[in-house]
Length: 348
Image 1 (cartoon, one colour):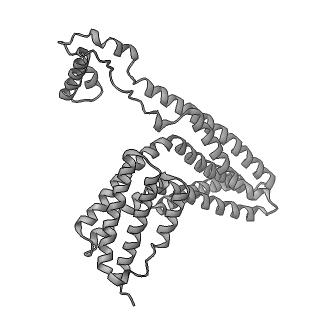
Image 2 (cartoon, one colour; image 1 turned 60 degrees about the vertical axis):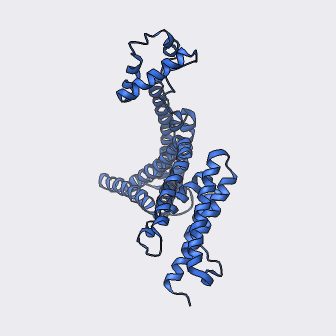
């Protein structure tokens, strides 16, 4: 019969093995520096695995399994893309319980925190690439769920019949989806235009070789961008040296980062589809033969489950505990629906 300490060690051993295997799997899909980083993380987890094996001895057999929650998250992550894998690993690496366990060497506890930062850095690129479209999809889905559910409950609170509720729900779905799509398109295009306005003009780079190199007004460009004076003068001097050598120079890379913004059309389509999908969920029960009270209960339950999924997904992608975000989404959605229903009842 294993004691509590051995069971804890076996759980740690299973988690370290699962992480090492995940990093090796990710490394096979990468090339260059990312692959090397992932392989080194895998080797670090194998060192941690060896520590628990040395403590357990024969008690390490049969091979332990990681907690079911960890295995489920890992399975979902592998199925739905590397950004989910990295986000899950980021949360897994942040083992604060290692900080309070006397059986964990200080170096190993510190390793886990540093691993979390390494994985955070790897995940940042993919989060940036998907942030524009993902933001539009999450906002669209959430708005579709909450606004349509609130609209339906508000109309139902007036005591009207089922056909009017359906008509109101479908009208809200169509109007909201079109509004969200158009709004996202305009918003993203406007943001891209604002970012592009900060980019250096090509004509400015073409006249650099004609500058008075003794006056060094070029440093003012970098200082205006927020660079400290000494660093700005160093950059300007570096450009002048390049000019003297006959090299092609420019004022630097573009200031804008369109990866985080995305494209207007993609954001519009994503937001339109997500809103329509979310808005359809509370409408569907009313399209069945169910009575109005029964359909309302079904709609509330479906909306709550959907809000939990969207909130939990955001939590997973952010590398944190999905439960608080899922509950937050449900609380906000139900709160808005309850207020609208109350107003509908009061106004009659």
